Image (tube, rainbow, N blue to C red; front, side, top):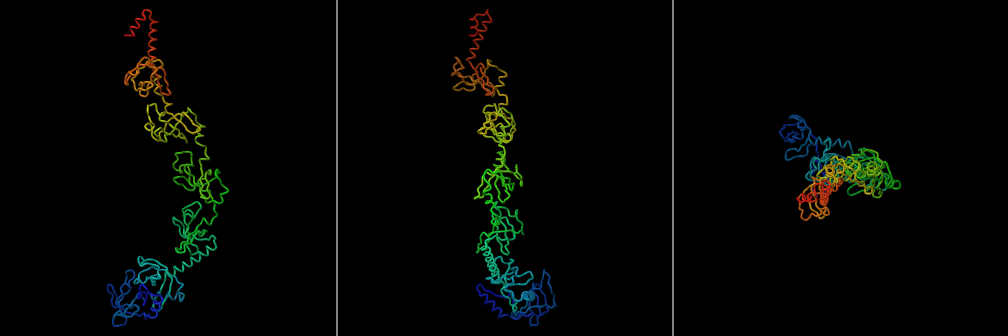
Length: 550
């Protein structure tokens, strides 16, 4: 009788089952037999009885090769009869050899032996058959397994030997005993560590993305990635390698789950306590760029503390989008402490505060009236912001072009290079006003090149207002005749589209305005008549008046 012959129900007394099986053990004698016949699935062996015993062909097949042939002598184990045919097994002979070697090696101290093997079968729901690397089989009762039958085949397990019966060539093992002993040992050692309340040394056993498993002399605990450094969550692989020795403190122990939580940073001096009385807002410190994020960079103070250098604090340039454009990993920079909260472990620093303000630098180097190059940075409904070095100036729609109602959005696109004139600098509000109109010839200037004060011009009425009438002089230039400049002409009788004649009385090239007068035209015409009278004595005043009436 062997392991395969043990029959178990769901409910059984383990000790009683063992004792009964040991007391009722059969001889299980090993005899030599002769192979009579080998068929496709079985082997007939003559063991000196009336009928040959039968082996399954798989018992003498290794790696697909049959190890014997008809006529060979083979050792088999006799285990009673199956009907009239002797019950024999070659496999159990091999198992007995392995069993004998196990007994020879371990003697009577089997209860301290831990075996490791793979589950190869489930025995009638009563337990599992485990085979080790040598081929030796063990039986593990279900109640001693802490396993479910589903998915158990092929699983590697460790177990403690409970009992060995040489008469049966059987070894009973228990995974439950091994686990419970391991729990007891772990509970005892953890309690010892907790009582001492001191840091202990361990070895980094495994590194994962969420932390590290530390071996404390046979007990494994987890250091979460939040508990590695006072900097906050870090990638453990950037700090340690498997096999490194570390000092840890036990944070908590869940006895039911056997979960041991450890901390590396708790075993170190708290750097925040160290800087509490040494650092304050406004201090300038030297730091090292240690990490980049989309929103800024982290800087290392060199004592396991990191501060945040937000992207808005890196440069006065508001168009900076990526901290890597100005900083490099490992670079040392001087920064100013702008926020320090030891309780919340928060430190914020600024690089731009130690740099000259771009507006102040701009004012030093530029003045109103200067013409400079810039680049369109942003387009809005009211104009465009033009970047000049490290500052932005506003180019209002009204200053972008002499064209009426023109808007920057229709004239430019982002990134366009433009030449602009500084027309105003507001030091208090740090605003800069720009103009393109002032460095280009206005329609009024062009008009001035062709006309002078006193010239008579003609134009169609473009628009009527309460204060006067606008006459179209050019595509981008209108002339204004105010109500008081009409003289005896009835303004109400003038319509849009009517052509009027008037005298130029004022040209404002900067504001692109031309002032006209019908009243002045009449006065000028009267003077010309009088002048003609004085110049031509042969013509009487009556003649001249008659000509005018015509």
